[in-house]
Amino acid sequence: MTFSKRLKRSMADRGISPSQLARLVNVSPTAVSNWLNNGTIPRPEMQASVAKVLGVSQQHLLAGVAESTTTPRQRTVAEIINEAQREIAVISGLPIDRVRIRVEYGSD
Image (cartoon, rainbow, N blue to C red):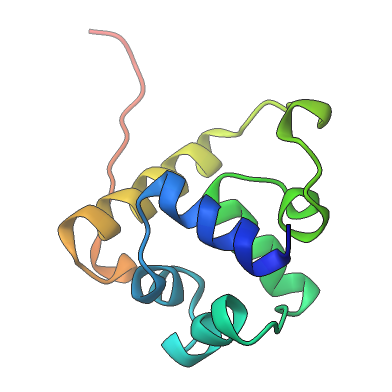
């Protein structure tokens, strides 16, 4: 399976359209179209951003490494909040910079 096929499948699994992916990783829709249709592969730093948005490993996108072979790591609170912010932006159709999340700690 090629990079573009793994990318398409990962996007479908997360319910993310090409235009949404472009907005979430801050690239042009043409760049995403090239990844999906023209056999181009994003730069390594962009690969990491795409993988993070899609909830897969960079190795999975590049080489098809099964997710079960990667060692799961504990996510930070900031990562969880950022992921929630991205998902809310996608669902609501808002730019990610317009989504604010407030977290309060403490006991009553």
